[in-house]
Image (tube, rainbow, N blue to C red; front, side):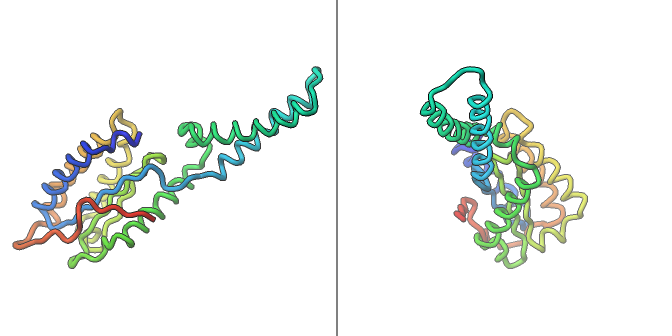
Length: 208
């Protein structure tokens, strides 16, 4: 999935951000990450479940097995279950509660918003769009000035549009389409001013 958010995406993204910022006072920052947490604990439990399943087969089977075979295959089953779960994203995603993924995405987005200084613009008009690919979620964090300037219903429409990008065959292209839809909204409620300067780098990258 991360392959869609490649250099071609970044090139088109910067063009789109430039168009929006040339037509409004808002400052847009987009950051895409492969995931917001590693969820290794869930993979551990999956490994233990697989171990218990294999051990139960040995214990209740009518066949006789060498004790060393039982020992080593039981241990091996844990690592097999762990790595299968950890490496297969759809399986891992299905076994993690949606509320937990949402919480991790929100925490990461707000941490990036603070660490990246997106709240330091003079007019408090920064907006972070944080893409978390594994969780298939987009978190939008507007600064106070932007949030207050745009009606709540407009924000709901924007969030709904971005929430559906992973339902499409090419999430990156759909993301850009949704971002372009924001241009007239920002222009209407946060119009540009003379001698406006770009206060936030478009290629901002934050490691937590």
